[in-house]
Length: 214
Image (cartoon, rainbow, N blue to C red; front, side, top):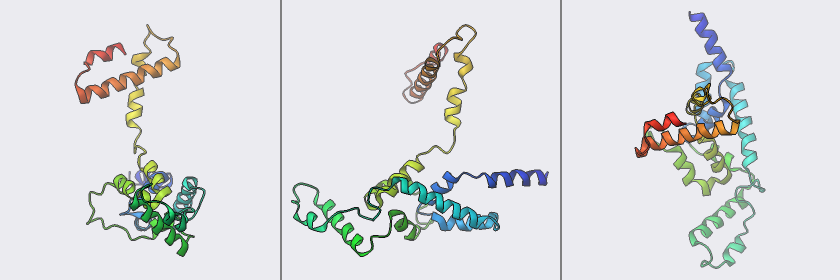
């Protein structure tokens, strides 16, 4: 029994979800350091390789989100910012862009990903209920393209159960008396039924007998 469980665990560890690991890195309380410790405890022989693969894929995905300028601030010119009228744009935003351009002049080789990973982790005890999506939304101006990447990745559902359950009722749509529907019509019926059930849960206006007609 123990050997069978060990084989299953080994397979799970080998085929672990890389996108979930990247999502963990994008939690400011975890980052790469916490994963290094966790991987080391699970399997010291493969932890270094997995961290290297994680960092490689994280960088690859981030490059796809980068804007035309790889630097921190793009190509904002401080002189242009100072010459603009504060009535045209929000004054605070102008100050932020000016500060960011100064930082870029000092060191324009760091990407948003480098800056994020170099910053200290947030203490879990201090932020046990941190809303990670809110964190990235609040830091979107500071971390730019990395924030967009984080919002996309962290919005991926952790499971496919909900979508699979919605389409597992296909046998109730394609009955012996209604078995020549076009694929697009089947999809429309399945989606409509799912939407009706969803509204019924929150509004209470759609009766259960609607399920029998869809």
